[in-house]
Structure formats: structure tokens, C-alpha cells
Image (cartoon, rainbow over all chains, first blue to last red):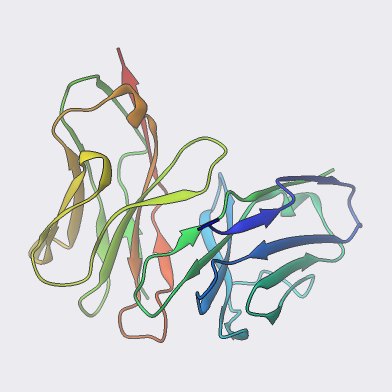
Length: 113
Length: 115
């Protein structure tokens, strides 16, 4: 079991640029979650998918953020245009069914200058 | 809306001493409760979970937690701390009535272990 795989591990970009974060969930997991972690706000749920369909995106901060899950093994979180306040660690997590624990990736540390 | 409070931001204990990390939750029904640990630069790893049944749950690495409905608490304990336990610990509550476990996390408690 390779676990949840996120790429890149680190991303440094300039304000205004587009950023794409990638996630491969654990095979067989039907739920995929995107979280953001900052010192000020802790861990925040941005969006989650069930069977590739977005279920709840109420945590997405602005229209600059978008997420897709084109198939069961891949999801992206895109920020366009990026701003310095988007700097954070973004985690992807997956779970197999309702109530099952989340399995987290190692995160992508995003720095927007 | 569900919420979690971890009142201790930072705790320091000596190696070999006992540990208790506090967690209080707010949720209308019987919650799903979790403790996760995060080492620097890493993702969150599940320590233990409570869904129902026995209110004392055992987890990995010698940790345990007790669900107390009357106190809305789910405190994490370990009888003897090891230096490798130094990390950040997160309590989380899950939506047991929804279609998925949307977890709401506490702000975390950073554990420092002195030798």
C-alpha cells in the first residue's frame, strides 16, 4: 500500500501565477478530501469528493480555487491566480467509506511570494 | 455545527512521565472521534478512533483515549512517554450522520519531551 501520494512536496511561486497540486488516493478509497493547514487557522476542509463527484465545496475560500477529480485515482487542486495569503500546507486525504478514518498524504508546502 | 477544542497549545513532559492531552467536542449526535499525530514535515497519522461501544479505546504506540459523553471529552493518554512521541497531536470529530466523515480538527497540541 503506497498510501496517499501528493506532488509536488514543495512549491514556490510568484503572486499571480497558476498553481496545481496533485493527489493520488489509496486505491479503492471512494472519498477524497483536500485540507489546508496554516498556523492561524489550523486544518480546514476545502472540498471533498465521493466517487469522483464533488460533494461539499463550502470550504473553498474563493473562486480562485478549484478542484477536480477526473477519475478514481487522481485529483487536482488549482489556484489561479495565486496570492501570498494562499501560502500553506495543502493535504490530500482519502477514506474507504463513511466513518472510516482518513489517510493523509505528506502534503504540499506552497509558498507564494 | 461540530467543533473541537484542544485547550493546551503546548505541553512539555519528561521522558517516562505520564501524558494526558485534553479534547472537548461539540456535536449534536453521537460523534465519531479521532486522534491524529503529525511529525514535522509529515502528514497526519491516525492514533485511534471511537465510533461506538467501549468508551476506552486503544491505539497505536501505546496510546489510549476515553470517551466521556457527560463531559463531551475524548482525552488522549499514555502511561509513559518516549522521546519519539514529540510531535503535534490533533483531536477531530466526524459527522456520523452525513454521507462521509467530514472531520473537524482541533487546533492541535504540540508535545515536547525532555530527556
